[in-house]
Image 1: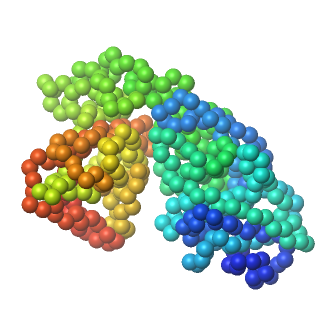
Image 2 (image 1 turned 60 degrees about the vertical axis):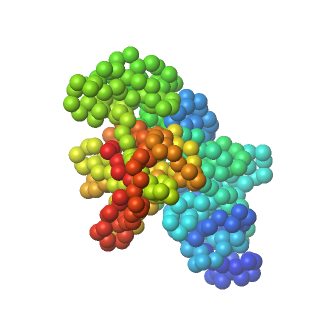
Length: 436
């Protein structure tokens, strides 16, 4: 459909374009976001009405979210090491005179979303403005890129946070969700590979086969939340009925063989099963609705100089599904004070990328777990508990309560925590041992 042509220049006069017609999007980057690549997505103006979506997985409160759908193909424009400030993009003429809402997505070198811009009308909500791409003339539109950081899953999409949303089944980006400094949360449904537009795609960013339009998915960013989803005590409102199951007391063992009941966990919706010491392996129980397992432990090494951190461990078979379809692992609150816990997929073809979420593949569900701290001193014994949430393609979550503990027996040295690099085979990670 339309072609996007980027060029560098501090003023329009530096443009070396062969055409002087269309829409000229001139970018401003006042926050100096580390943008190395930009993509323009032309969104349709049709059916742009707010819908209600859950604020976060730990809340039954809703907020207005406006959905857009991609109406035109795009192409990436590399900045070639230059600043995004003053960069201009030409959108070629539009013969049908239709109006589109242009969004400019800025990505860093690691493909993370770091900025989003739009043409705005200057009202209190800073509503994105549709434009007409003219023929026979060149219209200029100023686009201010606002910085974006990864949202906290326990808080939801807050101001100046944003993320692309990838389907765990096929690793295809289904869309994006973000919130500018002003206005309501916005989301867009992307065209999929091979498609001209995303107009016919349902508003189902988490690809759980429940859309927000006809099937009333209350949380389109979390695959396990939709009408009809099974719930047990101590869990959030997975079935979107407005009743937060985390407020319901556990009164039975919820179908866990070898367990005597449920105990309060470490936060809202995080109850665990009580193991029966008379039953072998009862601490490995998962309820029929895949409630969390009992507490497990990761032991960190220490020397006379203090804790060995960052500490690394390898966790095998994290998906617990026979290695058949992979899973998504997310670090959930609560976290120990002054500690950061991250996960990464073990992949011999590339260096691991640590973050709050990691996608395990069907052929390898081994995971790196990394714990780091800015604390100056760490007492011997329990450090705190972190929750790892594991979601398979079936959409039902499992939760692991992982207690970080400092080994009471000092070691002579921390040892080298060597992890796999591109094409490497070494995986000697010895600064933390985990029994997950």
